[in-house]
Image 1 (tube, rainbow over the protein chains, first blue to last red):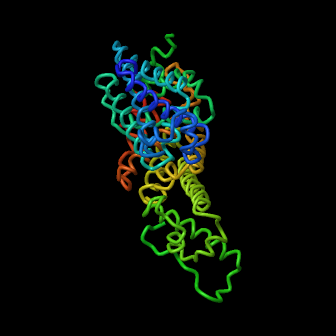
Image 2 (cartoon, chains in turn purple, brown; image 1 turned 120 degrees about the horizontal axis):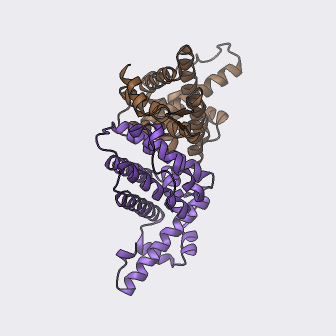
Length: 207
Length: 220
């Protein structure tokens, strides 16, 4: 996010506070759930004044939706960049994107939990953000698919939904940090309708 | 559960039925009433009064069976998952002579037909179950889990020289549930059967590879 950092110190501080509030929301929602999280908890955790919260957001729901939206966007950007930087074989792009996604989940367990678990069942409007996020990842997968694969969208939606459900189980078990270990299995799962079970390449970690 | 049918009401007064039968019957009607109300109104708008109305059970009788709307929802959710699982098991049993791929095909076909015929049932399990709050989302996950063993039973564990990982079973079931939920949300319920060949290809490809999956699907 450093490339979008505003130059003016005042704006920088304001943006920083906004971000802190969203991070506090993510942490609290992950720890105790959206319903149980109170405005008072958020301002305490983010170390901002109550007024600052209401200057930036309409209230708890608005803050939650903004935080979910920001995290999903960040996740998508990271995955998209990884796909594009591995422009060799299409399947290498997909594996790189998946690896970036798993790393993101491991590095941001609270954010991942907020947008992949809490968002589904918290306020109804956040479920729509989750659905839109799934749609974006289906589009990414279609973009990265081997040329001529031409799978029906039903299959790509099932692949994204299936990978998401494995990650959700991992997050709900409190093992988000170990998400990168899922790379070989999930690569094989996602690529199987394109390539065949035994023909998956590049599933070893490159780091 | 015909969506338009009035819930059958027991005859008033002295019908000579044992009280436990009446209670059981009321409970079942309330569960069916909640499933129907949810389908028509969504979780947030559904009230205990609406459930009672559809079940022809008074509000005070509602509270003899359930503590709250949520309590009734959880019972209804589990009952709905159970109904789908029993239906699926019966379909799989009818295909016992077939190989794994054949059983999967019969199972998926049966599942889609049932969901098309009972949109309220499909909706509570695949859509409302996810959206009604944390406790019920746990049931959704448990419900999904309960199908994992069904698909994995007898599934090939290696194909084209590679092992099929254990997580594949979960990913396949979770993927189908998520995709079907999205289709229902998009208003494409009652036409899920049209997705049969694509879903079958998805499942088979995960275990047998793309080529073999396509060969089986296109050979019917």
